[in-house]
Every structure is written in structure tokens, then in C-alpha cells.
Image: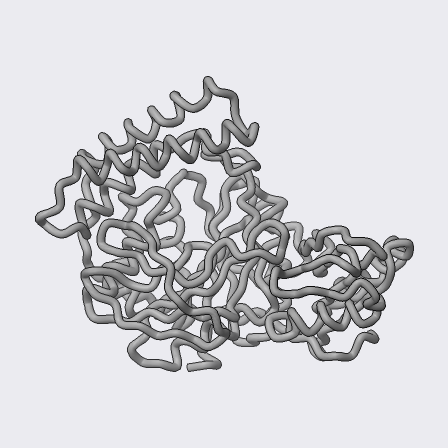
Length: 416
């Protein structure tokens, strides 16, 4: 199953530039048996049509604010035995698909998820978590790189995040895919719980990593400050109605959710992400969503029809190379041009631009299609790392190459 055909579904709306960057990262995958399906609005599809690899993509037009419907449209076009999902404001490490699909070598595994890295390209947004029947998440004590497989139940399951998850196609069809009642939020968690109820297991794959940017949308600012929590409220109640124990008293649970959202909004206000007058209207949208969730009909769990869809294998570049380009900040213009030229040929390029300073490290995936890490020779990239003040730039570059080597598919060779 490690070489199983994989269908990668990307849903996008009103973020064409982010979508193109996401798709570019997918073209550098080391797993060579996959297809890419894009479900997007007209603006996104127009941007995709201009990409040099556009003819190798499956595209579906959809322009409504319902991620579950959009993902089901992607499932309908998928020809792979495993179907993975990544958000348009995320980019995948080159080994992401290979590690993620590897979880399905275990026949009991119907769903898998990996780790999600935040905006600085280094710190984790999400690692090992478990979600319970109330929709609450709890940390799981798992800090190694080994895969973790655990059986699910009505009480909970290993949490998968929508921007980094995969499901066995047969299991998706069995439970009817995503429930369109969950227009946003808890959509993949509801699906995971429904699969767990049927006795399926979940896998956590630490080395299957994506970088998630939390781009601005109609529901949030670029600062992650929410502007509308209506659908979050609705999905919160829908999840409780379907999965909470019958003896659950909703009132105290929902009151706790309101209080948690208020604290979240106040933190944004204190940080300057919003004005004091913004808190009450956004919190009111959450309350209105809670009320709507009481009335909205849950979808019926019925098998999706099995369609004989052809698999459109994405052509891999031959020979494919994983290249390291490194140098000082003063030569950044030349080195960036060199990295862009290599990326244009299809190579997976990692550029390291280090300063003789304690400047914080940051990793980003550029529009040109290469990874770029900047930072000081004498500063930490991870908390566990303590570089010496006398460390030479070449030694520090090697240290950073070693740190990302497994997920970036790199070697110790610092040449190109």
C-alpha cells in the first residue's frame, strides 16, 4: 500500500495566488504515484489554467462557502485508493505524500494525519492530539518520528486536521464522505468520528508535514483574528448533536464554548488584532451559529456511489534532484536567482541564507517554488538547539540541513 495511487484534493476559494503556491509544492513530491484534483472558484481555476503543469491536473468548478460539498466533489473525481486533503494556504514538504500514504500499509487504518507547521516554518501548529465525543482536543504524549496507530471508538479518535489528512477511499465511500451540514469547521473531525464508530483505526504520521499559513479569508483576517464565527458555532452544535453521549447537557457545554471564544477574541484585542468594538459582533455571530446548529438538518449517512473514474497520474520530473543552495545574506540576490533557476527545472531546492547575527530563523516556500530559510548563525531554529557563539556558517548550514533532511529528502552534500 506504500506505493498506492494517491489522489490529492485541494479546495480553494478567493485565494488564487496561495492556491498556485500550494500546487507548486505538490509537484515536488517524492511519492510518484499520485494525482491532483483542484476544486475552486472561477478566479482560482483561471490562475490554475496559467500554470505550466495545468494539463496534468483535474479541475472542478465550485464557488460556494461549503468545504464539505467541495471536498465531496473532489472525492467524486478521485481515482486513487487513498484520498488526501491539503488547504490552499498550505504547502507540503517533498516527502509529505510518501509518508502519509505509508500509513495505509496497516489494513485497519482508514484515516491518517500528519504534523502541521506554523507561519515561521519551524514551530508546530498541531502535533499529536486526540478528539473526544464533545469535540474537545487533548494532547497525546507522542514526540518521536515513528507512526502511531490507534483504534477509534465512540469516545474519541486521533485527530486529523483538514489541511493535512488522508482517508482510504473505500472507507470514505462507505460512510458517505463529508457531511454538507458541516460547511466549515469540524468537517473532517465529524468524518473521523463516524469512521471510528465503525471500528476503523487512525494513524498519526509525524513525518508527513505541511506548512500552514492561515491566510486571510471571508471568516478571518491575516492575523488569525476571526471576523465571523457563525459556521464555527453551527458546526459545534451539529457535532454535539451527532456524537455527544445522550446524557450530555448542552447548556453548560455551549456556555463553555462561548466563554472560550470570548477569551480568544479578547486576546486578539489585547494583541492589537482588532478594536474593542469588534469583540461583541463577532461573539454574537458565534451565538447565532449555535442557534442555527440546533435547527440545521444533519446529513444522512449513506454510501456514496462507486464511480469508475480514471486516475490521472501526475508526471514526475526525471531525473529529480533535491538540491541544497547555501550562502551568506550579502549574496542573497545571486543565490535566490540560482535557486529559482533550479526550481524551474523541476528540482526540489532548499536555500539557506544565514547572517552572522542572532536573528531569528524563518522558513518559507516561495512563489518561485523553492524553500528558503533565513536567520542568524548564532540563534536557535528550534528550542532544543543551542548553537555555539563561535559556530562557523558552514557548520550551521549543515546543522539546519540535518534538521530538515528527512522531511526535505536532503543529504549532507551542500553542493548543487
